[in-house]
Amino acid sequence: MRILKVPDIEHLLYEVRYLSRYIEEEFLFKIGLSFHAGRSEARMLKVSSIVPKLPVPVSKEGGGDPQSWKKKKLGGIATSANKAPPSSSPARLHIPEDVLNHQCIGRRRANALVKYLQGEYKQKYDLRTKKVKVLEKELTECKTELANIVHSVSLQNQQIDRLQIDFEGVQAMITQLRKDQKTSVEKVATLEVENKRSRTLLAEEEAALSDLESSRIIEDFKKSIAFRTIIQDHIQEARDHTYDGVRLMQQKTGVTVEGLTPSKASGDPSSDFDGGEIESELQKTFALEVDDEIVDIE
Image (cartoon, rainbow, N blue to C red; front, side, top):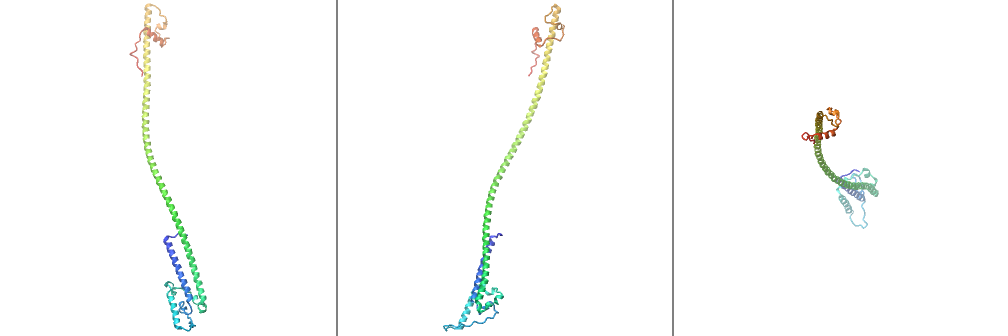
């Protein structure tokens, strides 16, 4: 069913009520006209039709004027005709030709005419009434559907309001997360700079320590070699001095020194003495002054 707007529904209801009232007035006018219509009143249905005159009724009491009675009756019919509403006047009603030429127009079939008109307009009235009921039913359905639509729209508006509130909350959360993310990015950048600088300093320190350790080892090695060379030179000098003194003593005195082999006495540099024997021999023969030549090793 198509949805009608409120102005359209009100206009339709107004038309239905007006049509119903017009049908009722027309039906009542036709019924009244049918009851009061006779041969003398058939001219109101069709002017050109020839209707015979009604016989003058005779009063049983014998009183009264027949002409005055006829004028009174015609005046009452004219008054009742003039009292009809303008919208329901006979001049505006459409009466088919077959109805005007019907045999019920005759005086003896007036009741049949009344029944015919009653049936015809009752059928139209029932049809219009059914249409009015159908329209009223459609109107009620439209109102119900409109109320349902209004309720559904109200629920949708409430849901939209809740979704709007949730959306605003999510949007605020997203904004806060973006701020936190920006802060985190800045902290990460700062930490990366600090890390890079720390790595640079560590690399420099490692390089410096490596160079220092290498140079220190080399210096220590050089110092140890130089010290050993100096010791060996002192030992060799002391050995030569000792051997020279022993040989000189042997030459002067002719006494053989115990423990002195011919190779030692002859000045052969290859000797069986080890470092400890040489050192003890040197300490026995003379005091070795090496304090000024010892190099301190760090």
